Image 1 (tube, rainbow, N blue to C red):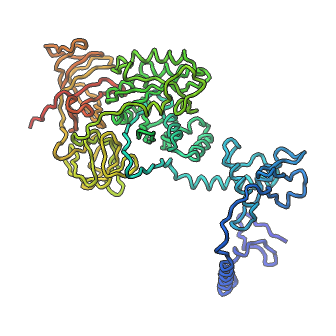
Image 2: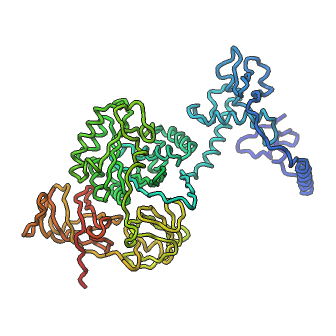
Image 3: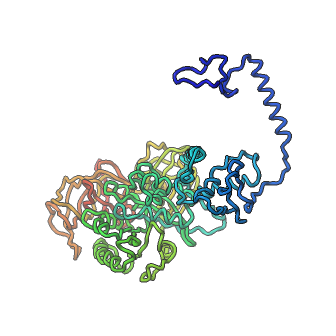
Length: 614
């Protein structure tokens, strides 16, 4: 008789006469000597088993064309025996149920290593392939299997998936690092920032480009697709290649500026994926300040383009901020052209173009030289790498070849070292991130961190995750520094060479254009200043004169206030000391934006630095 274990009662309460079906390993031995005997016996058995192993055996080669293995317990019913067609594929016998062959393949007992025949191995490989294929239902589920076999199979499938997920949980999308041959000429570095209204498809296009250029593996994307499907967000999976943060993935909104890179034949590109949401515009400004080239993504879907382009939409604000940040060339990607409401319609494309061009012209882009429009679809990847048939009216190059064909940027290689810091963290020392604006940096070089005047030494140099000995302007760098603590650095600090330090101060005169402000601005007005990667509180202490927009003439008298669309020269004073240069000497560190209450109030350029009074 078997005794059932009563919940709450210890199993030891079974009477000795009862024949309990317990695992011998779970029972305590009568004496400790007995336990040692068992161990010695196991060790001896293991030793003899190891001695019998054939070390010189031939390497195992799976026989792909082997007949499908059928377990003996299923061979009794003739309808369920799948025949093989000679290519390892099972062919159902007549009259078999549609799921029979699937059931046979899926309920194969797991083969212990080396414990099965070649056929067993071939089957196991085959079932894994089936599980890998997208669109086969939930992974590991194996379809609607009937009977006890099905439920145990489901449980086993679930365990396998859980194990896989545990293994992969720690895996962030590791970007492939392409080692360059030592004698290869250095490709030109170009930083591309993706800007535009929230949900226009910036991260999805970024993820698709990384996939098309081979920077993200198909397996990683399939894993993202599976996870996104579980959250009923199957169209988001491409954006997860750039949105690595859990909060960003849950809400589908980029918060931090995502970074990734890809290479074409002639150039090395860094993708900066800026957030589109209006709450995160400060992060977007930081991203745009590192860019050479901006890609403005707009959605062609009915209603979505209009929302982004209306007052308060981020299409307008981002285009203006990109211009202020010093981006000279703008590519406008008209995304979601494959949407049923658009269907690659030329009319809709032209409508978006007509509305945007006058605005971009007003912001300061030259429509003939600085702007380039192209249709695309981020989700399907249409017109990103290869041209598409649906869109017969677009005759230009697709997106990636177009980027490759752009002329080179002129960089100041022999100028003073200027590296505005974007971010810092601790990792076996102090690590800083930033884009080298001018000059060149080498390993073991002595530099000065401004405005604190700390002398630091460069221990190692990484350009887009690849270690180098020297870096030139335009490269996104990760530097490990010696001689400074991570707490002593703030984003917005500048690395300079000791011979030519950058200017720092609190007071400066600047020319400002008031873009959007309901009331008037008087001396004493406070706002937030964004200059290169630095964010600081600032006060307008005095208005010096108004500037005529058309003639550039300055007024003779001091204005008492300025209002929207006026240009003025004003004196500004920061709460703390910041690094800055005049626009004439160094444009990248001389242009700024003023923001207040989540809106961009004004843009401006530094004309003169005012020395501090002692």
